[in-house]
Image (cartoon, rainbow, N blue to C red; front, side):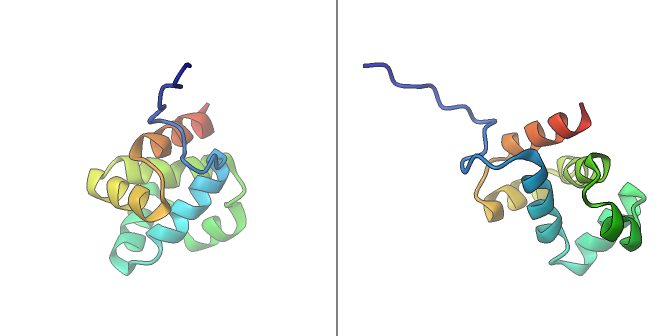
Length: 96
């Protein structure tokens, strides 16, 4: 019997990178200070988020924001039921 290796970069629920990015955005916006930091560091505006959230570049920016601050990355992964590695992998895929 072969036991498959656990891939730490894979999302536990098999969610697409776009879905992880949207969920991560929702999580980031639950805290006002974190939301302000997201806008400040990414250069995104509320209008750009509203109208461009389907854009892979915007989605990647959200995940890149989390990747730039490990405490947020770990907390977001925990809240979303995934791993930090899966969020990083999703960011890489969206940036490709």
